[in-house]
Image 1 (spheres, rainbow, N blue to C red):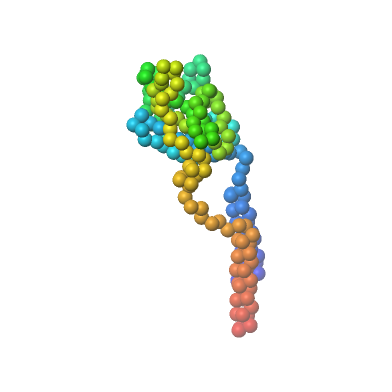
Image 2: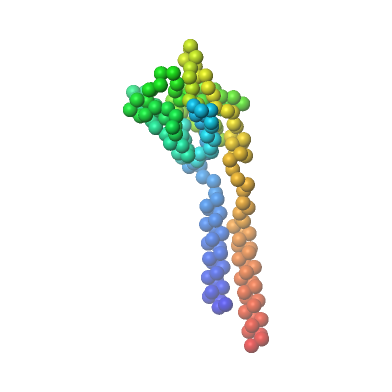
Length: 192
């Protein structure tokens, strides 16, 4: 291996290690929000969604692995349908006995949201819940999603992490490879 090739290899390893470090750096431009959705049949969808830092709960829902149908109203966007549960956009309130109830996880329980999903900006690490629900005589929803904290969602939904070498480790490995290449070259030169 020529000196030029050895220098090129070391520089390449340095660039790879620096770019790997940059790729794994956390950014303040995004946040992660837990999402729990309970459908009419009682099944639930759980997900941790990565969205821009200023995203609303409706943005979180739209970025999730579910199909969302909304309709614009005088009060902002209305949530009509998630996957196959709900109403079409042109008749968002087609079911007079049920609607999409919206919740925030507060402590170890759900609190009914006082604002629409399109108006609320959840914090990083929060959990938002939606349930297809009927309502009582005071128009309070009667169905809540199962309670999952953000930590519980992370534990359930995140695979075991794969160890990623730090940039310094990659640089050290590259230096070792370069040293071995130099040793091999000197050994061949001495033998010749």
